[in-house]
Image (tube, rainbow, N blue to C red):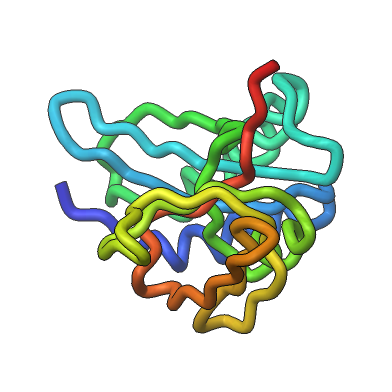
Length: 154
């Protein structure tokens, strides 16, 4: 199935989201027998079912006018990215400075491909993470598979 560019759709959807104080985090289209468009959203205070419903209703008619799939049918989903969502935007990194994070790496650093530590800084190309009292690492973003907020299980 031929589709329009997803970054154009994301920009289009963000224009609808902004007045609702919602941020469009990611737009994902899965092709196949039952094509699906999933729009991941976030807002200050978190996303609940009411927020997803509000945004779904706000985009329902405009997204048909955008015509992502040139008239082909698909299922539309609006979702929270989840508590363990990977950092995607500059805002994600900057809002977690001073907080514990989990990092999965492409290539190991000091023999490890998985790290936990406190995010100290982000400059668009690398992050600095304090692993323990003696170890602070500067890690290039291109070496990070996934970085997300540390989730403590008590």
